[in-house]
Amino acid sequence: MSSATGNGAAQETGTDGSEQRRYLRRVTWVATLGGLLFGFDTGVINGALPFMVGDLRLTAFTEGLVASSLVFGAAFGALAGGRLADAYGRRKMIIVLAVVFLLGTLGTALAPDVAVMVASRLVLGLAVGGASVMVPLLLAELSPAARRGQMVTRNELMIVTGQLIAFSTSAFLGNMFGDSQGIWRWMLVLATLPAVGLWIGMHFVPESPRWLAAQGSFGFALRVLQRLRPPAVARKEYEEVRSLAIEDREREQGSLRDLREPWLRRIFVVGLGLAVIQQITGVNSIMYYGTQILVVAGFGTQAALTANIANGVISVAATFVGIWLLGRVGRRPMLLVGQIGTTSALLAIGLVSLLVPEGTARGFLVLALTVTFLAFQQGAISPVTWLMLSEIFPMRLRGLGMGAAVFVLWMVNFAVSLSFPILMEAITISNTFFVFVVLGVAAIIFARRYIPETRDRTLEELEHHFRDVAGGTPAVRLGARGL
Image (cartoon, rainbow, N blue to C red; front, side):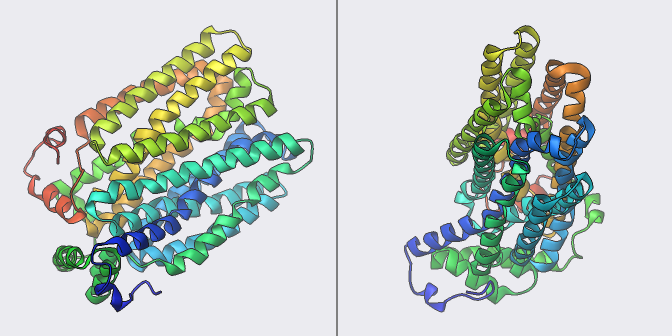
């Protein structure tokens, strides 16, 4: 099956849409292997890092550098990924990313010293960042409007599933073979399996019909839509996609110069803001350093590895809830509730760390609060963020806009992951979490003021609507009106 061709019989069969829905499900699960790799590679450092400290002689600074180097690479992978996806196609570039995932994983697993580890994590970060842009883009452009929220957030489900697999395998290997030198290498090398699966599977996934239309390949775009939608729906959506593609092709390729238009500038700022407020909750301080946080709270290393699995389990469960909610409630209220919940949990973690004496009781209290934090983060903030970033930018700026937004997201992530162990050592764990509380309050204010509602509109309808309201309607009013 080629990305640009489809079986003509699809026009004659599956008129009730059942065949097309099954095909769309298969395509979605294959593409989201990129999300699984994203999750595994960001989560596995949580369990591997305590065993690396002795083998690689890590200090607080080099520990933060090893954890954050992937994130730094991811920022540039996201920035380049959006442009590359626009130039060469979403599908083709995800296939390339699978190879980069494989090479980066092997580099980290075989690293003899800190320098090689950091360099390999940077390479791996390029793949993670590219996948964080390209996979949601592809899913958003393949999915029908009514199911876009659930389809795109399946990638978030695969991200947290990858993190859970990383936490679980690290706990198993750490508890069974923790005395063996280099056990962390086995924790890292497991990511080669989904990388190979992604490379093979993406050869059976179609290209985005919207990208094909943007290149002028209207016949191929129609054939892909006919494989993904019932015939009448495919034809109607094709006419919308074709009309907007022709309109966009009359302009130059999207660039930063387009931000001179007020409506595009407003969308761009909202996208960057979404990226920042998703990360300043401090979520990745828990995803990368959860084991160390639990050790500081009162658990032993082996017990902390096992207890940390709870963070992975609640992340997966909360994401299921988030996917269900996205089909029933608006994006904006979910984001606000998530921000309030995470900020409250961070405040409680800081207070417990400050007021409760070190020991098992404090350890379990901190664990319960990190689980609560992740329930709000993974059940509301993260799925809404990735979904909205994939849908708010117009077609001609979609790769550039999402790439820039996710670049900012990863750079904030980098700042958090690099500074967290340094802050913990310098100002204590409780004061570190109080810093995140202040940032969380700022995030709530931004979301309340600027984030619009985007539910239940096609990507083309959203683009026309954003343009139509460019006369100065404040974003908060757009959200209240149900954009």
